[in-house]
Amino acid sequence: MLTATLHCLPSLHCQLGVIAGLVATLALSIVFGGAFFYRLLRAQPSKPRVIGRMKADLKEFGWTMSDDEIWLMYCEMIVIGLQHLIGGFLILPALLGLGDPAVAHKLAMVGALSEVAYDAWDIARVLYKHCVQGNLPGGRQALVFMLLHHQLSIALVLPMNVHYSTNRAYLHSVFNLMGAGGFALFVSHAGQMLDLRTRRDLLAMRALSTAMFVVMLYTRVLAFAPLSVALLRTVWRDDARAIFCVGVVALSAMAGFNAMILPSTYRRMVKFYRIDPPPPPSEADVQQPDRTDAPAAPQRLARAESNGTLAVQPRELFVLADAPAAADRAAERGGGVACTPRTAADSPGFGGGLRARLGLRVRRGSAGAHVAAPAVAERACGADRNLNLSAAA
Figure 1 (cartoon, rainbow, N blue to C red):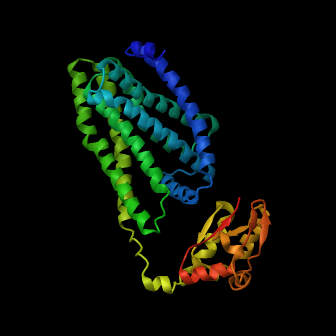
Figure 2 (tube, rainbow, N blue to C red):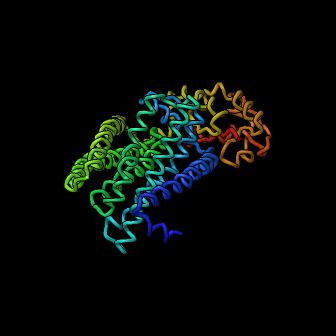
Figure 3 (cartoon, helix red, strand yellow):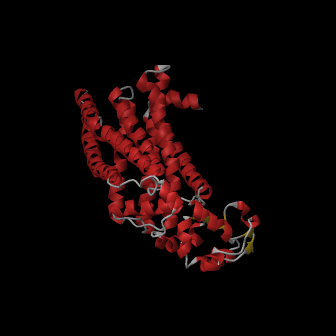
């Protein structure tokens, strides 16, 4: 079947059949793949941070979504990123002149058609949510944004595949757009999980945001402009006036889309360079932990019930007025409060010190005995080690 498909690919009706098959495959992959990653990653400690940052990013475009919708979108975008990367890699043999030229160029057509399939599916999804359900996040603004984003492949890939599938500027353009899209998705996903309060993660975020801006600048401006001109010149020279007119409109709209996202990418990069990295802990800090910044701890502890896990610095334990309530809520959920190290229950002196100050009690839930070990906590404070409190699900 694959051989027959590749043999007939240059024809329009065959490409339409391939698109229909890819749309069905991609829709199933996104739905089931998104659900798989949703379950796999739901206990990630970075989940609240990811949701918060995505909310802020969406707010920049005037969109509002619930936490569950944002997390599902985050998980579905993993599958979409894989689709973009696979489609881009299918174009590489033809672009680099590898293997049998005939097979390489037909694989490149399939790679380009996979982008058409995704765009067609996403447009259908957006139109359904806006016109039928009436609950598209962002409303008409989001609808216009999506149409600008997807119109280029819908308008140009089919005629270009039929008439110019071996044109190097065309192959380069499709590879740039698909590769840049996949790269941007995965860089964004990785960056959303980083904890910018740590020096290492802040430096990693700077590197990722810089790499994204450089890639977007090259693919959306420095390469996009000359490749678009080269394509239009080729089509004009061949007297293909209809394709030329469609190309002018589609490429102009894509240039407008690029003008929308490039400044946002730049501002995102600059924002992380304006954040001062926290200094590495000094020997004095380790010996005498600073307790002045502890007031943030109760707010963080209060999120344990919904987030599932909470990391608390030892110095914060002295002001956790909400600790008893958090322990009660966790126990009611069948989990309890777990205090690491795991050997807490065997520690000498268990039962004194911080437990009296915090009011934490030993509970037993479905996950076994969960204890709050004040002796271990007290020693952790002296050694400035992290103490993890978990609200077990």
